[in-house]
Image (tube, rainbow, N blue to C red):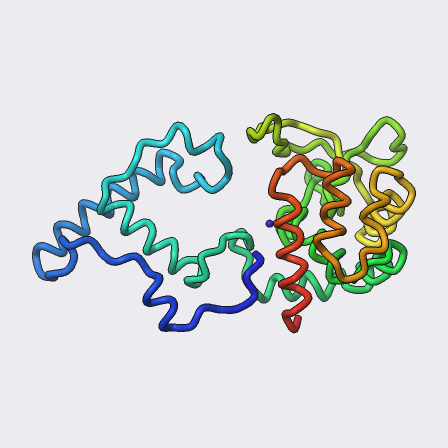
Length: 248
């Protein structure tokens, strides 16, 4: 879901980076043998599914722990992979892809925002959070459903439907389920339906007319039951703040 707008300075990145294990410090043959052993350790860990432990608590419980050296190396490599910022909210989506996504949806976000009484940045952040910056779309078979907001197809929905696996939180635990979602012919239709849904459903009235207050908007959605993720308000609020202060 990428909320730190300020890039880390070189000094910060250096000081924040975990120190290498002592077996690496001397170089030469000692370094080579130690590195090969740890590299094998990390590779085995990833092959057994450890690389996806960020996907939720359902993955973490079954993983065997790395050795101390392996954990240190994995932490250092992870820090480099995310630019030293310590955040993984972007899901590996690079800045150019984010910029392109925001530019594409901007007219639709502005129209929806005007109806909802909120900033276009908040609507754009909501779309980015739910769709992984447009890189993880819900699909109707092999076709993109254009459902950027993860809106489910209830009994009143008369349009096309896309069945997809999703993560729901039940009693604080993440559970994978297959749910039916609304499917749209294009993004413009998706944004109109999104705005109509929030504006007309009494459950989401406290989210309306929040202006630039992303936290108030996100809290209104959460109270209305829009999402089950206990961290949803924080994720959406931080992402909206980042988009608002970043020149895309």
